[in-house]
Length: 465
Image (cartoon, rainbow, N blue to C red; front, side):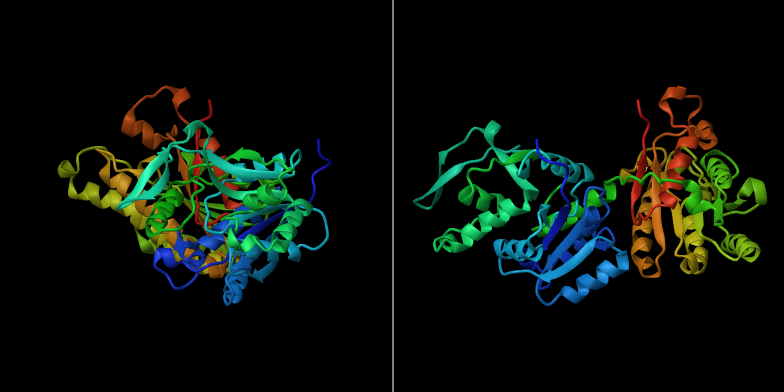
């Protein structure tokens, strides 16, 4: 068993140009789901509680762009942004030297793996408590062949046992003194460049074979963005990925003295958000069609509601929209007024609220919270308008998070599973209570998202048990 946990440094290796994705600039700066790939990757380490420091290696000539991204996102753990080398091994060696003579644990991660999960990082840090080297890998789902060249092409020579094969990912993790020693030996070997290692574990295997490399299970989502199709896949995975709101130490620390405006706050999730926020010291304004006659599809009514809250408190910190309407039935059978209401409340409403909220939230570096539904991932028969509007809200969330980042405004979207709200009761009738979320549980997660630093995320709320 190793000693108590050492300081842990996440090294984001972002060298290289995106030639295989058809770019002449670093592919790490390509935007996916509203942010550059590099921003997503740095955020995964900067926000992780087990990471103490982050070092970024970037393609020479682009350090200023990275520094601007770090400042914009307020990445507090990034301590160094360095020019990368001409190869992966050269970039790693630069990072290892930059960390100095101290002892620490280091997680070396490809910048173009932006979907690395917090669980993987946590498992790696835990494994480093017992091992000096850790790699991340997943089983091979495909048959792997060993081929030899022959007349007109390649021919199969061997098919290894798939049960013993793994597909390597990152981070690759080491005790700093161990991986530094392996690299020092590699760079002193005149034959190293003739057959260079493709990754850091390869260097360790060749030059420190006495050090076992423990395997942590990775994830199919922890993909590497290399080819044009990877950009599309990663974008879709980000859209479907569920973030987790960090649990705050105290709601009151973030709510006391703040102003919260809730549209759709007369019942269900909205009403529970109103009660929870008031309980922890926020000044809360609730607007709805039934309570105040405020229709979210009416731009002037939305603007008037926000102006009232601002006039009375001098600030607006949080804006929440839980207003929604659901009419079941075939699209071809729907009356025109039903179509207008569904689109007006479920999509035009969020647009109106976003437009009217911007000037207030920019002053407080505040937060806009919207809501989607599990149906946003795939349109469903008999509520096509609802499903398509909720998909649009997700795209609106991600786009606004990007547009408003420079103003410090956070924009997120909560995606609750089936919830026991009056709207659902009207649409689906009585259902087993144990199959539905309680509105209070959704409200609690919603407040946690509001007072977090998340932005551009879809946060799932799932029934446990």
